[in-house]
Image 1 (cartoon, protein in one colour):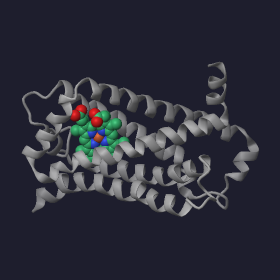
Image 2 (cartoon, rainbow, N blue to C red; image 1 turned 135 degrees about the vertical axis):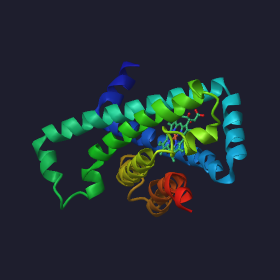
Image 3 (spheres, protein in one colour; image 1 turned 90 degrees about the vertical axis):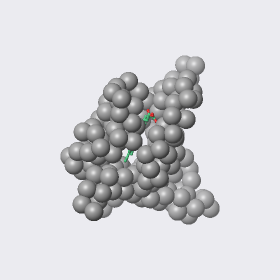
Length: 220
Ligand code: HEM
């Protein structure tokens, strides 16, 4: 047990933890997008999907517990590694523009915005859906209410934050591939191809929701 703790708190252990939690959260995003796309099917379809999900009861609470745990440990390890890198002069020197991509250099910034986004997202959508529906339909909360895309400010915030999330994942997934030893093997090409689904297409799918419900349906 002590050994495991030692490994997990070493720099390499932290990087492995970040890779595993980051990739798991990316997988969750695929499921989450699938559910959210029911918004385009219509009010009845989306409400029925959420009702079915809520019927899973305790299982959903366990999944949410792990999601929060993964987000927290990913952010915590990220902050510790960032501080360590800044302190080590040598690493700072190798962090120059020539050696790293801009998505890598801005990972701490984009990660912080994603964290703020998630805190806002949970305290509005998740809280409303679970504790404060006030007789509104789930569909209405997302598409019309002031915490949802009824507010142009919220819609705009979602678009920017999710675009930054995609940018964060661009670096994150590539870095996870390196940490887990996929880069340089025969799986590298397929890994890179699949990764674009997660850092580009899935965020784009999410962005289509505030773009459509927050702006397009209001002008057509
Ligand atoms: C247009 C974009 C999005 C919409 C409309 C949306 C909608 C929702 C809703 C309605 C809930 C509450 C579900 C419930 O309790 O029944 C929720 C929860 C959650 N969302 Fe999102 N979401 C969006 C984007 C994202 C993104 C980009 C992430 C990033 C990882 C994310 C992560 C989560 C998490 C972790 C939860 C809590 C777990 C859960 O209850 O499923 N969401 N979202």
